[in-house]
Length: 112
Length: 115
Image (cartoon, rainbow over all chains, first blue to last red; front, top):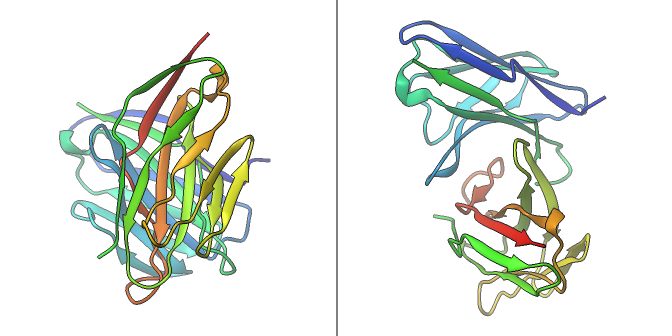
């Protein structure tokens, strides 16, 4: 089984609708991260979690919220999707003992 | 703050050519340095890392040496293959102060290898 999975892998939604992306991990990562990847911007950190129910903002957090009710799952919610949130979203995890992050396969989100 | 600058690309090479992708960084203290690779349609995969000055990370024929005197971590491979076509990201974890939780990424370099 893959260590980090993301669902859905592809989603098309309309402006103004709420969207939730799910990240699930089976690696017992303490830290988890949500990034967005856009041409010309590379990877930008949206939110991260340093434990169950412990989260904090990254550099592009406006319009996004996260929740982590158990170690395995880290949810990213767009309360009211906008076209500027069309992107590829990646989840990543990290263990306490090292600094490298391990990435999921990504979710391609299109907001029309 | 921390920052990573890598050559913009795209880089196009013929199979068996020598590859260098430059990466320089700005950070306080003694950062840890990483190279990630992203194949089309996939997430990023850790390629190699180095955690202290003069360390050499290596994997799958790729190498990079942590040079504190030049604040660099250039990626090299002696003979590239078509299967190496991907986007390569340099990243660092800051050495002191700031947040221990985050990595700082470069913007990525697209490599295309032609047969």
